[in-house]
Image (cartoon, rainbow, N blue to C red):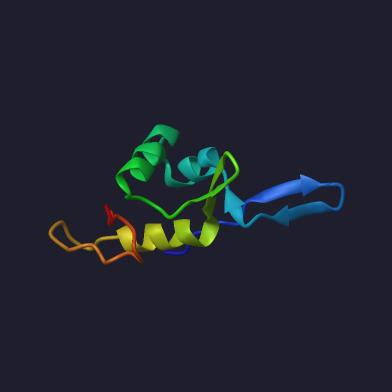
Length: 90
């Protein structure tokens, strides 16, 4: 299954794809809430994210990878290891 993660922003030259999604855009794409994304960040789980100043952004390729890595064929299937995701190094 392919997912189109090409959000478009409008400007006077037309629409251009963005590289990063806001919390709301990422939550909408995953059909989850912004509070769920925030909990995932606190726990060190969920999709990779970045912070630019006070703004949290999700790279669109990281969201696609998260969706692909979260896909299961059967209930007891073990998740594939995500590149450093969900692991706390306290």
